[in-house]
Length: 327
Ligand SMILES: [Zn+2]
Image (cartoon, rainbow, N blue to C red; front, side, top):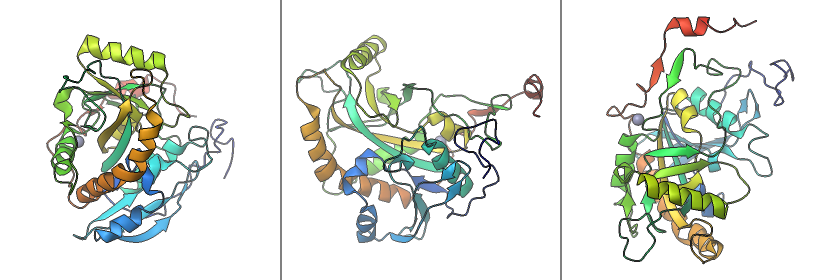
Protein backbone atom coordinates (compact mmCIF):
# COMPACT_ATOMS: atom_id res chain seq x y z
CA UNK A 1 0.00 0.00 0.00
CA UNK A 2 1.44 3.37 -0.92
CA UNK A 3 -0.90 6.19 0.06
CA UNK A 4 -0.40 9.29 -2.02
CA UNK A 5 1.40 7.30 -4.73
CA UNK A 6 -1.40 7.83 -7.20
CA UNK A 7 -1.64 11.59 -7.61
CA UNK A 8 -2.28 12.16 -3.93
CA UNK A 9 -5.57 10.24 -3.99
CA UNK A 10 -7.23 10.39 -0.57
CA UNK A 11 -8.30 6.77 -0.71
CA UNK A 12 -4.71 5.44 -0.67
CA UNK A 13 -5.04 3.79 -4.06
CA UNK A 14 -2.98 0.66 -4.58
CA UNK A 15 -3.14 -0.44 -8.25
CA UNK A 16 -1.02 -3.53 -7.54
CA UNK A 17 -3.83 -5.36 -5.69
CA UNK A 18 -5.00 -8.49 -7.50
CA UNK A 19 -8.48 -9.96 -7.22
CA UNK A 20 -8.76 -13.07 -5.10
CA UNK A 21 -12.52 -13.48 -4.82
CA UNK A 22 -14.97 -15.82 -6.61
CA UNK A 23 -15.93 -15.42 -10.27
CA UNK A 24 -19.28 -15.47 -12.09
CA UNK A 25 -20.91 -13.84 -15.10
CA UNK A 26 -23.99 -12.69 -13.21
CA UNK A 27 -24.40 -10.78 -9.95
CA UNK A 28 -26.92 -8.94 -7.85
CA UNK A 29 -26.34 -5.91 -5.67
CA UNK A 30 -29.56 -6.47 -3.76
CA UNK A 31 -30.62 -3.08 -2.54
CA UNK A 32 -33.59 -1.71 -0.72
CA UNK A 33 -36.15 -4.26 -2.04
CA UNK A 34 -34.39 -7.01 -0.04
CA UNK A 35 -33.32 -4.78 2.86
CA UNK A 36 -35.93 -6.17 5.21
CA UNK A 37 -34.28 -9.61 5.14
CA UNK A 38 -31.28 -8.19 6.98
CA UNK A 39 -28.44 -10.70 6.60
CA UNK A 40 -30.78 -13.66 5.95
CA UNK A 41 -30.98 -13.59 2.15
CA UNK A 42 -29.03 -16.85 2.08
CA UNK A 43 -31.69 -18.61 4.21
CA UNK A 44 -34.42 -17.67 1.79
CA UNK A 45 -32.16 -18.69 -1.10
CA UNK A 46 -31.47 -22.06 0.54
CA UNK A 47 -35.21 -22.70 0.90
CA UNK A 48 -35.44 -22.31 -2.90
CA UNK A 49 -32.51 -24.63 -3.63
CA UNK A 50 -29.65 -22.11 -3.95
CA UNK A 51 -26.45 -23.05 -2.09
CA UNK A 52 -24.22 -20.35 -0.64
CA UNK A 53 -20.73 -21.69 -1.35
CA UNK A 54 -18.76 -19.03 0.48
CA UNK A 55 -18.60 -15.51 1.85
CA UNK A 56 -15.55 -13.45 0.88
CA UNK A 57 -14.12 -10.04 1.70
CA UNK A 58 -11.77 -9.24 -1.21
CA UNK A 59 -9.13 -6.52 -1.13
CA UNK A 60 -9.45 -3.87 -3.82
CA UNK A 61 -7.13 -1.07 -5.00
CA UNK A 62 -9.27 1.25 -2.87
CA UNK A 63 -9.15 -0.71 0.38
CA UNK A 64 -11.02 -3.71 1.78
CA UNK A 65 -14.09 -4.39 -0.31
CA UNK A 66 -17.66 -5.24 0.71
CA UNK A 67 -18.87 -8.75 1.42
CA UNK A 68 -19.14 -10.98 -1.65
CA UNK A 69 -21.42 -14.00 -1.40
CA UNK A 70 -20.90 -16.85 -3.87
CA UNK A 71 -23.92 -19.00 -4.79
CA UNK A 72 -24.78 -22.05 -6.89
CA UNK A 73 -28.34 -22.07 -8.26
CA UNK A 74 -30.58 -25.16 -8.49
CA UNK A 75 -29.64 -25.57 -12.18
CA UNK A 76 -25.92 -25.41 -11.34
CA UNK A 77 -25.15 -21.82 -12.36
CA UNK A 78 -22.96 -19.53 -10.27
CA UNK A 79 -23.83 -16.03 -9.14
CA UNK A 80 -22.39 -13.39 -6.84
CA UNK A 81 -24.27 -11.22 -4.40
CA UNK A 82 -22.91 -8.07 -2.84
CA UNK A 83 -25.39 -6.80 -0.22
CA UNK A 84 -26.98 -3.36 -0.51
CA UNK A 85 -25.04 -1.73 -3.38
CA UNK A 86 -21.72 -2.64 -1.72
CA UNK A 87 -22.28 -0.35 1.25
CA UNK A 88 -20.56 -1.10 4.54
CA UNK A 89 -22.19 -0.33 7.91
CA UNK A 90 -20.97 2.92 9.41
CA UNK A 91 -18.90 3.94 6.37
CA UNK A 92 -19.71 6.95 4.21
CA UNK A 93 -20.01 5.27 0.77
CA UNK A 94 -18.53 8.27 -1.04
CA UNK A 95 -15.64 8.81 1.36
CA UNK A 96 -14.78 5.12 1.30
CA UNK A 97 -15.07 4.70 -2.48
CA UNK A 98 -17.80 2.09 -2.08
CA UNK A 99 -18.94 2.20 -5.72
CA UNK A 100 -15.37 1.89 -7.04
CA UNK A 101 -14.70 -1.08 -4.77
CA UNK A 102 -17.94 -2.79 -5.79
CA UNK A 103 -17.45 -2.33 -9.53
CA UNK A 104 -13.78 -3.27 -9.41
CA UNK A 105 -14.80 -6.57 -7.79
CA UNK A 106 -17.59 -7.20 -10.33
CA UNK A 107 -15.32 -6.30 -13.26
CA UNK A 108 -12.48 -8.51 -12.01
CA UNK A 109 -14.91 -11.35 -11.30
CA UNK A 110 -16.05 -11.32 -14.95
CA UNK A 111 -19.60 -10.15 -14.32
CA UNK A 112 -21.54 -9.27 -17.50
CA UNK A 113 -25.09 -9.17 -16.11
CA UNK A 114 -25.78 -7.00 -13.06
CA UNK A 115 -29.14 -6.93 -11.29
CA UNK A 116 -29.96 -3.97 -9.08
CA UNK A 117 -33.18 -3.19 -7.23
CA UNK A 118 -34.44 0.06 -5.82
CA UNK A 119 -37.46 1.44 -4.05
CA UNK A 120 -38.74 4.92 -3.12
CA UNK A 121 -41.12 7.49 -4.34
CA UNK A 122 -43.10 8.27 -7.43
CA UNK A 123 -43.29 11.90 -8.54
CA UNK A 124 -45.92 11.13 -11.20
CA UNK A 125 -48.11 14.15 -11.77
CA UNK A 126 -51.16 11.90 -12.30
CA UNK A 127 -52.28 11.23 -8.75
CA UNK A 128 -56.07 11.17 -8.82
CA UNK A 129 -57.81 7.84 -8.22
CA UNK A 130 -58.82 7.55 -11.87
CA UNK A 131 -55.26 7.85 -13.25
CA UNK A 132 -54.84 4.17 -14.05
CA UNK A 133 -51.68 4.65 -16.13
CA UNK A 134 -49.85 6.54 -13.41
CA UNK A 135 -46.79 5.15 -11.63
CA UNK A 136 -48.23 4.57 -8.15
CA UNK A 137 -47.17 2.94 -4.85
CA UNK A 138 -47.28 -0.84 -5.24
CA UNK A 139 -46.14 -0.77 -8.87
CA UNK A 140 -43.04 -2.33 -10.39
CA UNK A 141 -41.14 0.00 -12.72
CA UNK A 142 -38.48 -0.75 -15.33
CA UNK A 143 -37.31 2.76 -16.21
CA UNK A 144 -36.07 3.76 -19.66
CA UNK A 145 -33.65 6.48 -18.60
CA UNK A 146 -32.27 8.39 -15.63
CA UNK A 147 -31.47 11.83 -14.31
CA UNK A 148 -28.23 12.06 -12.33
CA UNK A 149 -28.60 13.78 -8.97
CA UNK A 150 -24.86 13.90 -8.36
CA UNK A 151 -21.54 13.49 -10.13
CA UNK A 152 -21.47 9.74 -10.58
CA UNK A 153 -18.34 7.61 -10.72
CA UNK A 154 -17.73 6.77 -14.37
CA UNK A 155 -14.42 4.87 -14.31
CA UNK A 156 -12.14 2.79 -12.10
CA UNK A 157 -9.07 4.75 -10.94
CA UNK A 158 -5.76 2.90 -11.14
CA UNK A 159 -6.99 0.62 -13.96
CA UNK A 160 -7.30 0.91 -17.76
CA UNK A 161 -10.84 2.18 -17.09
CA UNK A 162 -9.70 5.17 -15.02
CA UNK A 163 -10.47 7.72 -17.74
CA UNK A 164 -11.25 6.01 -21.00
CA UNK A 165 -13.29 8.75 -22.71
CA UNK A 166 -10.56 9.47 -25.32
CA UNK A 167 -10.58 5.76 -26.32
CA UNK A 168 -14.24 4.83 -25.95
CA UNK A 169 -17.41 6.70 -25.12
CA UNK A 170 -20.42 5.34 -23.26
CA UNK A 171 -23.53 6.40 -25.19
CA UNK A 172 -26.31 6.50 -22.60
CA UNK A 173 -29.30 5.41 -24.68
CA UNK A 174 -30.85 2.39 -22.97
CA UNK A 175 -28.88 2.73 -19.71
CA UNK A 176 -30.94 -0.14 -18.27
CA UNK A 177 -30.69 -3.16 -20.57
CA UNK A 178 -34.05 -3.47 -22.39
CA UNK A 179 -33.56 -7.22 -22.89
CA UNK A 180 -33.08 -7.69 -19.14
CA UNK A 181 -36.08 -5.43 -18.51
CA UNK A 182 -38.14 -7.81 -20.66
CA UNK A 183 -36.94 -10.80 -18.63
CA UNK A 184 -37.64 -9.04 -15.30
CA UNK A 185 -41.14 -8.13 -16.51
CA UNK A 186 -41.85 -11.73 -17.49
CA UNK A 187 -40.50 -13.14 -14.22
CA UNK A 188 -42.32 -10.55 -12.08
CA UNK A 189 -45.65 -11.85 -13.39
CA UNK A 190 -44.74 -15.34 -12.19
CA UNK A 191 -43.73 -14.57 -8.57
CA UNK A 192 -45.85 -17.00 -6.54
CA UNK A 193 -48.53 -15.57 -4.29
CA UNK A 194 -48.02 -11.93 -5.20
CA UNK A 195 -49.21 -9.54 -7.87
CA UNK A 196 -47.86 -6.04 -8.49
CA UNK A 197 -50.66 -3.52 -9.01
CA UNK A 198 -49.10 -2.75 -12.35
CA UNK A 199 -45.80 -3.32 -14.14
CA UNK A 200 -44.46 -0.37 -16.13
CA UNK A 201 -41.94 -1.55 -18.77
CA UNK A 202 -39.50 0.75 -20.60
CA UNK A 203 -42.33 1.69 -23.02
CA UNK A 204 -43.97 3.62 -20.14
CA UNK A 205 -40.96 6.00 -20.44
CA UNK A 206 -40.41 6.28 -16.68
CA UNK A 207 -37.25 8.10 -15.60
CA UNK A 208 -35.17 7.26 -12.53
CA UNK A 209 -33.89 10.22 -10.57
CA UNK A 210 -30.69 8.38 -9.70
CA UNK A 211 -29.20 8.89 -6.27
CA UNK A 212 -27.04 6.60 -4.17
CA UNK A 213 -25.90 6.82 -0.60
CA UNK A 214 -27.66 9.91 0.64
CA UNK A 215 -28.72 10.28 4.26
CA UNK A 216 -32.13 11.66 3.34
CA UNK A 217 -35.03 11.50 0.93
CA UNK A 218 -35.62 14.09 -1.76
CA UNK A 219 -36.88 17.46 -0.57
CA UNK A 220 -40.36 18.79 -1.28
CA UNK A 221 -38.84 21.24 -3.78
CA UNK A 222 -37.00 18.46 -5.63
CA UNK A 223 -40.18 16.37 -5.84
CA UNK A 224 -42.15 19.34 -7.18
CA UNK A 225 -39.45 19.92 -9.77
CA UNK A 226 -39.52 16.27 -10.82
CA UNK A 227 -43.31 16.26 -10.94
CA UNK A 228 -43.25 19.28 -13.25
CA UNK A 229 -40.50 17.76 -15.40
CA UNK A 230 -42.66 14.66 -15.82
CA UNK A 231 -45.74 16.64 -16.76
CA UNK A 232 -43.79 18.66 -19.35
CA UNK A 233 -42.01 15.71 -20.97
CA UNK A 234 -44.68 13.04 -20.52
CA UNK A 235 -42.03 10.94 -18.73
CA UNK A 236 -42.99 10.15 -15.10
CA UNK A 237 -40.12 10.32 -12.62
CA UNK A 238 -39.34 7.92 -9.80
CA UNK A 239 -36.71 8.60 -7.16
CA UNK A 240 -34.44 5.84 -5.92
CA UNK A 241 -31.07 4.24 -5.35
CA UNK A 242 -29.10 2.81 -8.22
CA UNK A 243 -25.42 2.42 -9.01
CA UNK A 244 -23.88 4.48 -11.83
CA UNK A 245 -25.25 3.33 -15.21
CA UNK A 246 -22.18 4.87 -16.90
CA UNK A 247 -19.81 2.82 -14.76
CA UNK A 248 -21.75 -0.36 -15.54
CA UNK A 249 -21.51 0.37 -19.27
CA UNK A 250 -17.82 1.25 -19.13
CA UNK A 251 -17.20 -2.05 -17.29
CA UNK A 252 -18.99 -3.92 -20.11
CA UNK A 253 -22.03 -4.95 -18.07
CA UNK A 254 -25.73 -5.16 -18.89
CA UNK A 255 -27.50 -3.37 -16.05
CA UNK A 256 -30.91 -4.78 -15.14
CA UNK A 257 -32.69 -2.33 -12.86
CA UNK A 258 -36.08 -2.86 -11.25
CA UNK A 259 -37.85 -0.44 -8.96
CA UNK A 260 -40.71 -1.00 -6.56
CA UNK A 261 -42.64 2.16 -5.83
CA UNK A 262 -43.15 2.42 -2.09
CA UNK A 263 -44.66 5.89 -1.67
CA UNK A 264 -45.35 9.23 -3.30
CA UNK A 265 -42.45 11.69 -3.34
CA UNK A 266 -42.01 13.96 -0.32
CA UNK A 267 -44.71 16.58 -0.04
CA UNK A 268 -46.74 15.42 -3.05
CA UNK A 269 -49.32 13.78 -0.79
CA UNK A 270 -50.15 14.61 2.84
CA UNK A 271 -49.37 11.14 4.27
CA UNK A 272 -46.14 10.47 6.11
CA UNK A 273 -44.53 7.75 3.99
CA UNK A 274 -42.30 6.28 6.68
CA UNK A 275 -44.98 4.27 8.50
CA UNK A 276 -46.18 2.22 5.56
CA UNK A 277 -42.64 2.17 4.19
CA UNK A 278 -41.11 0.23 7.07
CA UNK A 279 -43.99 -2.26 6.97
CA UNK A 280 -43.57 -2.75 3.24
CA UNK A 281 -39.80 -3.15 3.54
CA UNK A 282 -39.89 -5.66 6.36
CA UNK A 283 -43.06 -7.64 5.69
CA UNK A 284 -44.11 -7.81 2.07
CA UNK A 285 -41.38 -6.77 -0.28
CA UNK A 286 -38.21 -8.70 0.68
CA UNK A 287 -39.60 -12.17 -0.07
CA UNK A 288 -41.14 -11.05 -3.33
CA UNK A 289 -37.97 -9.24 -4.47
CA UNK A 290 -35.70 -12.11 -3.38
CA UNK A 291 -37.89 -14.66 -5.21
CA UNK A 292 -37.80 -12.49 -8.32
CA UNK A 293 -34.02 -12.09 -8.19
CA UNK A 294 -33.34 -15.78 -7.48
CA UNK A 295 -35.51 -16.87 -10.40
CA UNK A 296 -33.64 -14.49 -12.71
CA UNK A 297 -30.20 -15.45 -11.38
CA UNK A 298 -30.99 -19.08 -12.17
CA UNK A 299 -31.85 -18.53 -15.81
CA UNK A 300 -30.45 -15.34 -17.36
CA UNK A 301 -27.86 -15.58 -20.13
CA UNK A 302 -25.98 -12.59 -21.46
CA UNK A 303 -28.49 -10.78 -23.68
CA UNK A 304 -27.72 -10.57 -27.38
CA UNK A 305 -30.77 -8.56 -28.46
CA UNK A 306 -29.64 -5.27 -26.94
CA UNK A 307 -27.12 -2.53 -27.66
CA UNK A 308 -25.42 -2.36 -24.23
CA UNK A 309 -22.01 -3.46 -25.58
CA UNK A 310 -22.32 -1.59 -28.89
CA UNK A 311 -23.13 1.63 -27.03
CA UNK A 312 -19.61 1.61 -25.58
CA UNK A 313 -18.12 3.05 -28.74
CA UNK A 314 -14.43 3.05 -29.78
CA UNK A 315 -13.09 6.45 -30.88
CA UNK A 316 -10.43 7.55 -33.38
CA UNK A 317 -6.87 7.14 -32.04
CA UNK A 318 -6.24 10.87 -32.53
CA UNK A 319 -8.40 11.65 -29.51
CA UNK A 320 -6.09 9.91 -27.03
CA UNK A 321 -3.06 11.55 -28.63
CA UNK A 322 -4.68 14.96 -28.16
CA UNK A 323 -4.15 14.67 -24.37
CA UNK A 324 -0.86 15.09 -22.51
CA UNK A 325 1.00 11.77 -22.41
CA UNK A 326 1.09 9.91 -19.10
CA UNK A 327 4.21 10.50 -16.98
ZN1 LIG B 1 -27.98 -5.33 -22.58
